[in-house]
Structures are given as structure tokens and as C-alpha cells.
Picture: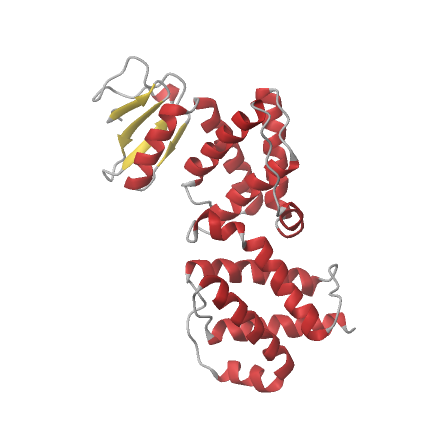
Length: 280
């Protein structure tokens, strides 16, 4: 493998066997090296491939940010990928590295930000938040500073964004916890109930809503199927369907995207289950 471009002492670009540009990281991997030189295999710590536009962003980022911050991000991504059981969008190496650098610099200047969604993130994205707490602990060990729980929640949001494939960008993903709470409140107020948050049906409903938000942001709804089941649930469960319609109206106003009949059917099914369990 040969160097295509030296980005800094610790980061170079190369090409893989499909002629796609890749980023190669390793302590001292670019030191006193030039384009065309062989890459020292024993120095390689991480290889990943970004889009052409993302490569350009990443190159600018690593010119300004210490290499250690990229390694912090890599550790966070490894843990998140393992505990969540799914791959994350590679752009998190750009967005989260930049955020960590900014957060640490702000801390050292005694500029602290509060996360208005801290409660919602802890409640609805507890796994991602736990990864954020571990990240904060790692930074304390490596940098000697103690970032707040608010920062752990910000890190969790970057992970959620990467789970959502960055389709809506960080701004819309940051609204996801609030949207989730709003949709649960629609159910509570429609049926005048306090949902049993310890029940399996509630947990499944929350999980469904998380991915519903993801599909709405990315406009990647369930594929169209026969409408027989949709019509069946619409007629059989009119109150549950009416509640699902309220959620559809809310989601369409929030995202500007149309909610399909298939999504309405699954929403109705989950609402029926969570309300039936609540009335046991």
C-alpha cells in the first residue's frame, strides 16, 4: 500500500484494491514521508473509507486537531458499534471528533453548555447515553478533565445521528428525543392513561417509534404492501387508528414528509398493544 497524500504526521491517504480513496491512521505514519512512499504496515492503527466530500472535510479537520482526539472517537465508535450491534455512519469520525475537540476546549475556557434534552436522552437512548458516560470517563483519564453529564448526552446524540445514517443531519436528530416524548404524550392524552413504562409492550412501542423517526427523517418507510391489513386495523381498532392519525399529522408537520399507510398500520398495531397492556 502506497501513500497517496500525507495529511499530517499521523494520517495519510491511500487507495484500496478497488481504487477508492481511504484514510490510514497511525502514530508517525506520515512522518518524513511523501506521495508514492510505501506505508509502514506496522504503524497502521485504523483504516476507513469516506465519501469524496467527507474525505476533504476530514483532511481539514485533522490539520487542526490533535491525533489523540481521533483515537478517542475511534474508541467511542468501537464501543457503540459493539453494544448497539449495528454499524455507524463513518461521518461520525468527522462530527464527533470535532465535537470532542470543541467540548474539551470549552471546558478549559470554563464555558459550559447545558443539554436541554438530557432527561429525554437518558430515558429513551439509554444505551447511547451509557456510551457517552464511558466516553466522558475515558476523556477524564486521558485529558485530566471531567466533562459533564450534558456532554455525555451530546456524545449520545452524535451516536444516534450516526445510527440514523446522518440522513437528517444533527439538527433533526437532536429533535428525536423530543419527538419521541411528544408522540408518547399523544397516546397518553388521547386515551387518558399513564402508560406502564415497565411493560414489554411499552418497550417495544418506544423502539418502534425510534425507528419510525429514523425512517421519517430518511424518507425510508416500510415498502408498500397489500392494503387489506391496513383496512382491517383501521376498521377493527378505530380509536387506536385515530390516535395513529394524530401521530401521522404530528410527524408530517415535523419532517415535511408523508407517512405511508404501511406505517399507519404498524403504528396502530403498537398502539393497540400498549393500550391493551395498560388496561390489564
